[in-house]
Image (cartoon, rainbow, N blue to C red; front, side):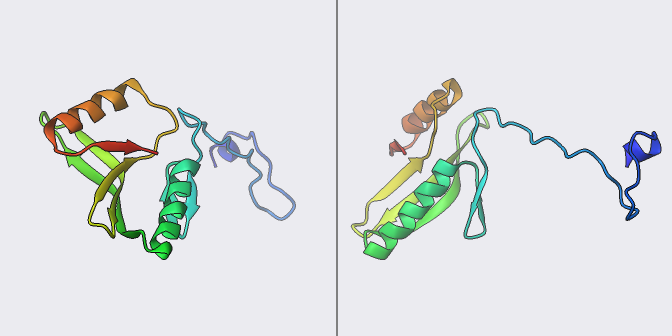
Length: 123
């Protein structure tokens, strides 16, 4: 609309605005937001892990899972786990899906594992 007001864009014959297509903003780590079953995932890798969980649930290995589970740390820091997976055996897995490990991730992972009695699995 701003381009129309400033006289930089013309009206098409149909009378609608013809504005240049907005460029897609590149994400910091190159991940592509993906939607599966109406659920938005931050990366294709995370969506793929979700698909694997569905298959594992159909095979009887996984009972259920939770997504985006926050873990509150001392000092007001919050770490969000991608999945908490409950297996039929009674075991619970805390999973974080990462394309690349950042310095911040390693620090928070170490702090979570120090304060809580579980280990974070990387997928």
